[in-house]
Figure 1 (cartoon, rainbow, N blue to C red):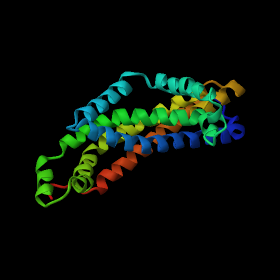
Figure 2 (figure 1 turned 180 degrees about the horizontal axis):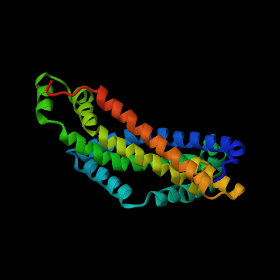
Figure 3 (figure 1 turned 90 degrees about the vertical axis):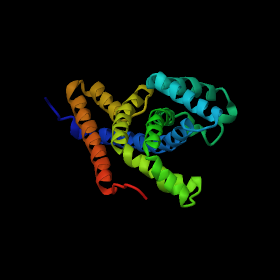
Figure 4 (figure 1 turned 60 degrees about the vertical axis):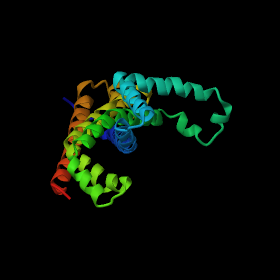
Length: 231
């Protein structure tokens, strides 16, 4: 194996790595917020809200992520081109970039998958803790913020770690719509140097290191959060 190309294309891989991390952080943050809405919506006693949440999760979980990216980028994106008002607006520099369509697709994916996980975590919180919170006079919002949601997240930390690693691997699909993430950068190196395996080996190691870092962060969170019994 030869890695003499690394000195020439190292900055390309580094820029691709930064794009991958941006995709991971943006879609992870906004996706988690969406997942909270979906999770609580799945437990809602309002039939319409519960049905909408269920329909969303079924749609996201029942269709391939790559298809969702294509629908947003080639479908919705092509619609925007036909509206001069959109092309002339301040949003056009963002709407013409594949990066933001991938962020939206990944955000929706996280919302659908993690929303179901959060629903399970919310159901897993002991009812005695919630009843004790009500007995202390806590409002529903205060109980959610101080008791229900923190306890559910504590229960779900191992699952959230796995979902985060899965999200990291899903960012590799960004290269299919001309986003120069770390895999896209590796493909560029392969095309220009005719080195087939070495760039892919570097990328595989990069993803492995990032996955291990994610798992370590969640592991430290598990160790730092004290285990609660009751209030």
